Length: 155
Image (cartoon, rainbow, N blue to C red; front, side, top):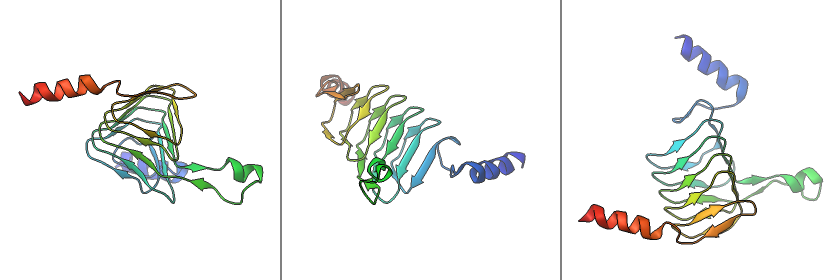
């Protein structure tokens, strides 16, 4: 009973809505989140007024920002609105701690976003390793390993 009271009070005080992941995961809007997805604490998923889709079997570490909104032009007074772009993570994507996925990013299946990476609005091919700021895409980095594992599992 005390836990339920605490959860209710926590939601009211922090604007963190209850979710199936962790009490300290902040989800805004209505993202489409697949099956068997892990999202670590202190991660934000902002799908306000746009589409954010996270495929099945994704692992999103703690302290990640998946944010489809960009308000810097509004803040500077050079726009009168927040810019929003959709974000797609296909199936089997790993996102390392302290990464940022910006609006317009499309991450192909079986890809890894290394810890601390800033992912810009770009289409990233399947099986890629993405590292750094500015991001560098190592296309097909995991392709042979993933395909070999799939082949071995089918034998």
